[in-house]
Length: 242
View 1 (cartoon, one colour):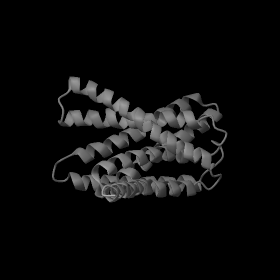
View 2: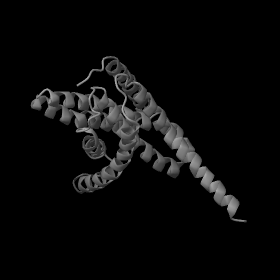
View 3: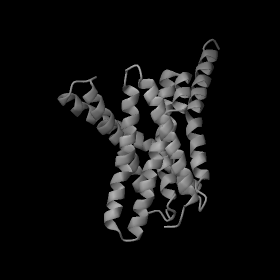
View 4: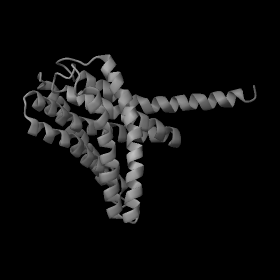
């Protein structure tokens, strides 16, 4: 009995941290899902996409480790050029490409993918699955204060990356159905390129250490959130069948 109380305390503490890590992703996922006004997706595809988002974290980790290893061979760490290449071409590209891979394999040929806004729902759900798992790892390592910070930065950030991916994903699907192969290919590239660039900006600004870096980061995040919210509302209101 001497060991039971500490173990139960440790267990309950982990449960609280995990819940704190999951809640922000859950509420954002609920918000995105409720914006799907024309024809909402089945629970099964939403759950599957959350799980695929978790799977994408493991793909991203492998790509990031390989990319960091190669980058370290050619560039000295902890300088501006290294950080730029790391956050834009290793972290941003690896994570967004990993999300796109599982997104495409899970939904491109789905019979449920029949509305333009579906692309936003699918991509945002994958991104929030990614953010959920990543958040659990960070919170278990660094504690509840990390959960509070990431609840208003990293988790909504991933949701925004997913929205920007989903915008082009929906257009790519519509282009395919209309026989416009050139536009479809362009949109597929933008599905990864646009969120990767925004993701890279987010991480690069967050890594800066000058006196104004915090202000720049807060302004960047605020603008990103406002634009993303406006895009979601506009696309939801103007949704149409493919």
